[in-house]
Length: 108
Image (cartoon, rainbow, N blue to C red; front, top):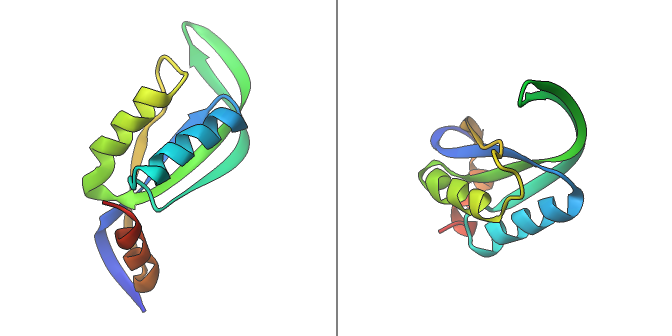
C-alpha cells in the first residue's frame, strides 16, 4: 500500500571518493541514523573560490526520518573531508508503507 508521508526524507551529500563515502555511509547506518545509504559515482562541475572545478565524486542518498535530519547532518559534518559538504534534505511525500516502516524500524 502506498501512503502519504512527511515523516521521512532523503538526505543527499557527496564525498571525494568511494572509500570516504563508504565510511560516512557505515557511520550513519551503524548509529541508526539511516536505514540505507546508496552510493553513486558521479562527476560534479561546481564553482569554488571563484574557480570552475570538475571532479569525480560519490553521491550518497541517505534514507532516514525527518526528525533525524539534524543528527544526520552533524554526523556527516563530523566525518566529512570537505570544508563545505553538500547536505540537502529532500522530503519523501509518499511511499510504500512497508518500506517506510522499515526505515522507521532501522532508525532511532
